[in-house]
Length: 486
Image 1 (tube, rainbow, N blue to C red):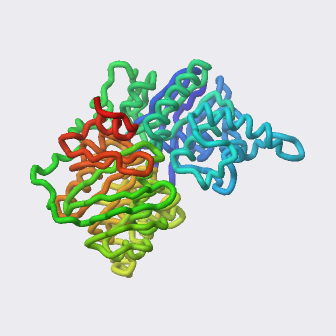
Image 2: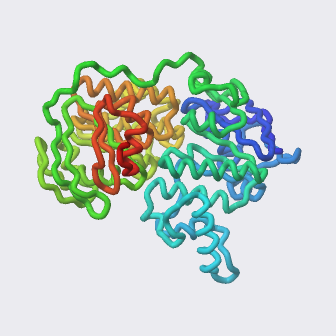
Image 3: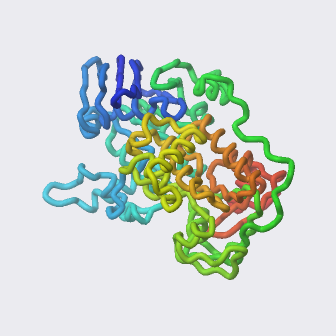
């Protein structure tokens, strides 16, 4: 049994977690839900030794514990899979899994390391080998390495912080089977997710946090997505998707692309994006969605037969100059400079227009209000924010340059249901004002509820196109998996 009593954490005058109590029994799966900034990540980091509490206590089998480092927490049987990846890209998957716990005495036993790593990767559903460099893996594949690393520590409690945010449908199902297997072995699981169907199908009970305070603890059985959403935000939450305008997008092309290829994952892509349109791009992990976007904006070497009405793009600077911006799915690695302040991040790409500190503060304040970013002080480092609020800052950073074409890759990864509604409304508002948007998403409800139409990618090609009245999960999955219509 693991117990926290009165657990409190303050960052200066900001109380991130206040007098939190919980008892965790072996072999149970507990869901932890709440809006961004509710205190979920703070609680997880206290329990796993990343942060030290300002007050309260943690005990294991009625024995008081203090963890100065994550290594000390791991030694007591508490492991965590972080939402933000913490891998060394120049090391193999196997070396990352066993980093600091290498097999062998004087030298690393490479055979044993790779053999055990291969089995762990098999358990989490990975399709790559243990010797693959982590720098060559996608974000989703790196997440599988993180999960394998946590499992390798044979914990009594394993904490998952938004583990499926970057995983596809099949990888997520394999993870759920793995978690249920851990439960059967008596391992306790704390599961943090904004994906409410996962909470409902996977957990035994759930804890709700709001503004750093535990507002309730409930049995999962009998709950619904609607009731969970209401518990999280403290008020009834209507449909999170904005009502789409009955007026079709302007058919004037904002972007026409013909025969774009980027070896090895993007093969002969042609598409048209209209003014004021929200175009979805769906597909399984590894289907080439992200690689296409990166090739389009000059982040990957590409060949292209034709592009209009904009000029050919060879570098990302050329894309930005023509009003085409791309918000990466890799928030920590490619979207933000986490050591810099919130203000510096939001204003980073618009510095030519907002040079003075006063104008930067005004711009930052504007986006903090528009995107409901929970922040005590805009001069604090980006690391002071929760993952969801960091995601909002990544979006604000590119909106600050007033783009004509906005490409959003997994725009609501790690974002709570209330904040999702705000982001969806913002995207819809920009489209209504004439901006053209491409939304790349692994969440089919996001594609269905937000987009005017969608392209489904498979093996680096466009497998099919679905108009708004054809957008269903069944149709998307049929194209993504390459299944012929009945």
